[in-house]
Image (cartoon, rainbow, N blue to C red; front, top):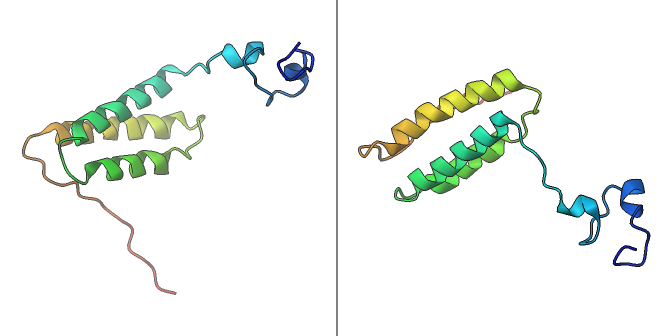
Length: 109
């Protein structure tokens, strides 16, 4: 029996149902190798940006903005990952005081 009195098979019928006694509750989502690399890169950015004021919000915003990319768009994710590695190297440089950005010019209509 489930903790709320329902049968344990309830979680099979309603996959969103999770409680402490459901087998689904105890399983962790598996990440692909690329996902693990991106998460590791994010943690490295957070560590490197701690000593530099104003960097952490920018780092979080950048990763949050790119989190909407589909998991199946591997080429784009790999491109951003390599770009992120280069930016991390720049951030780790002692002489780095700020990060520059390129933005699209606003088109007036």
